[in-house]
Length: 461
Image 1: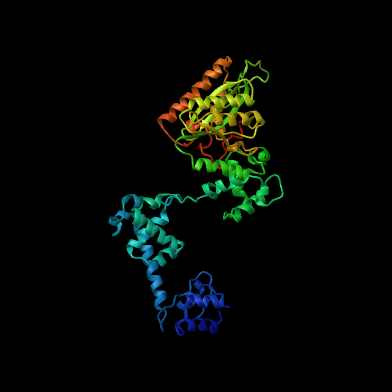
Image 2: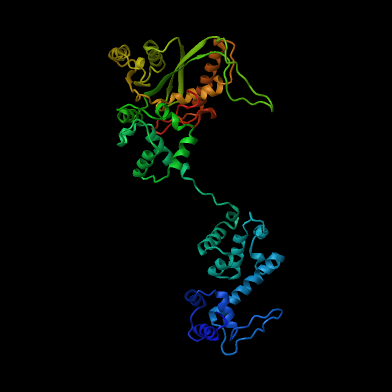
């Protein structure tokens, strides 16, 4: 095909006489630009001969177009720049304008920002951005980004790796996911008792979070939950879930200085014996706990967490019943007798909402006569232990002093629990916070009343 003299001259005429570009001719004839440049250098096809090199004939009639000559000149200047930089960059005419640590990054090691440095040096030399992008094989936008980072920070940002922000790390998305998981699917229009992945994905999309199921799975897995426990841990089946949650949030949003809000629950009963847990051991040692042990006794710790001051009030009970709840109410009334109102919030256990307890609250409010604080109940939705903020405190206490323990007696276990709560209360007396971060580094969430909070650790039920 390329031995045809007529075809050869027609290609040369389109470029040299008609002024068409090499790129356009290559695109329309499907001939490579390398071959077209060869046609421009030779007036007629050169026969192939073995063992001999065809003579190179210079153009006699017309010179190459200015655009071609300009690209060749730029290419020669570029190769000249690389030649000097490879040998001694400090001796170049631009070496004094560039920091020495930047020039050191010209090592051909793949992890060094070689192209970034070359882009900066070429720009200082006067190369156009388009020429830099062409010779380095990157986009012009990337070149402008390198130059902008260098001008803004003096080159320090060129060494920083580009970190891609993960959707699963978005706090707003996490809050939206757990807010949905904590409420029944029926509230979002799905006739189901548990969430499906495609239902979660569709509901999040309607709220403005267009994410794939992989991102949702990552968020749930990183939080410590597993899909198999969704009906027990993650979802409340209370038909009045939103109304009760809104009621509690309204109370907290308008809590006065002479009012206190308490999150109340019981920890236990748990047996006093050797407990399993994570311990630090040397290589080759496997900690063991006997499956069958003789219990040294058992404990139930009833506690109340005051949310505005993060103070815990606790005592030990023999049973979980209404009598112990009335006892807790009396302890709080006596301890906070200078307050005007106390809000008592607990889960939907039967002894937390018994007729006897309601009668006690009503009778107390009638007889207090302004001398003692009045009581108001703020019950949590059913199966919503994730909203009971004191569960976060219990999880931290369990990890700190219950797991991996072997107390000799019930008294020793009580002493450890008392010390834990005393140290915690003293910490928040000195560092006053309505809601802190992870307490002592062991509690799994911040002490906030949020619909997206996961106060109860699924690993420690």
